[in-house]
Length: 75
Image 1 (tube, rainbow, N blue to C red):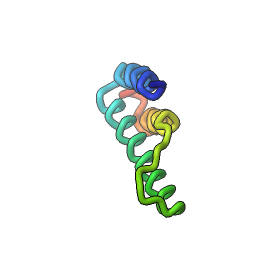
Image 2: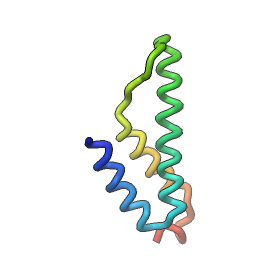
Image 3: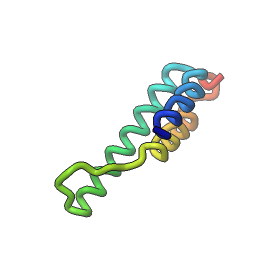
């Protein structure tokens, strides 16, 4: 349940800035995790689901959102 607590705290921080920043951070984290899981399953030849911790991808997504949005939107 650590990912849930991390997602809530990241959502609080990004949501404080703007809804766009929150959406971009969540989307970037989810897309990075999906791409990494697809590459990992292709390399291993996995047929079933690939279980990954989502926390590192949430953090990278939040950093991407903070880095890509203009400073006027970051409050």
